[in-house]
Image (tube, rainbow, N blue to C red; front, side, top):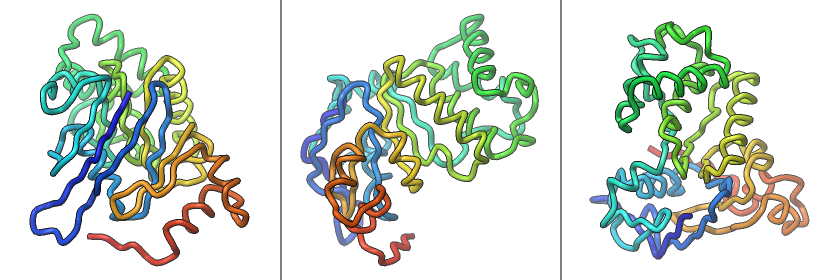
Length: 247
């Protein structure tokens, strides 16, 4: 589904590359976890794959489409769930979702039916006409997710989809993502919740200094280190214990 070839990005005036000659293949139907410390290159890589920023060099294909020739087509087959809430607080949940759905040319009865079903599936049915500004963090996360999947994307990019939410909301979000995956959506997920990633992802890639330094199924990576009991142990072993404060 995703083929990345020698992809690099160096920002203007930066001393080093944020992503450096990165090669990676992600199969259709995977739940792929992109894990790394602050400043490792996760956000830059995801931003390039979503056509939000241009690579310095290299190339990538998503479902056979390249950003150089098919940028508009690419946008139609991907969904993006940003870490920050991409919602209007003064609008209701339904009004927000009508707005975002219309951006993908979904209109009328079909759009309203899809919104109603999604709100019901994510436990938000009775809050459909409440303003987003009154919602808790977990509720906003769920609406954020709905906004990104109304057009039924083939590939869904998730940046910290459960950060700052209660346990119940986290469980609902993860279960809904698993259901989307069962129906065929390929998921690329970034998070600092390594225990969650260990149980959610079918395969993970650990990125540091702009390069993939380890790649495989969570259990295989854990078994590859004698002292590791979980994915967090593997992560610390590979990336170290030093603070990665990044501005």
